[in-house]
Image 1: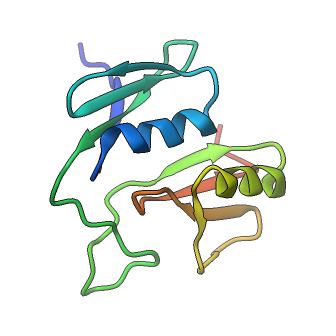
Image 2: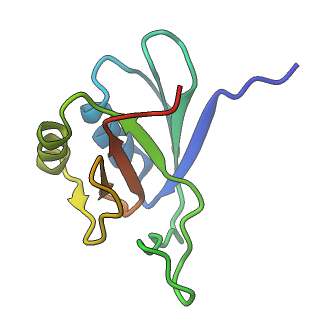
Length: 123
């Protein structure tokens, strides 16, 4: 049997990116290793992990043929898009210049990974 436990994001400093994510996802549990940090939701579901990668290069958003390509992005459901966008920016995210949809906000985390705040998610 296989079970997905986490999606892993590389970053120049795993702990800093994990701390940012914990501020966005209050109540999540954390485990810290030397160059890797795992966070999990309170219900024990699939979590996120962050791994220090000294040669990390942030992806381009939107994609550009001659730049580092995005390999994964996170969708985070929110009740109030404007309020949660402002909170994410206050915690260290940057609003991406390109916004493809009205009910989604694309932001960049402190390491440059794109992530989306969404008012609706597939069931």
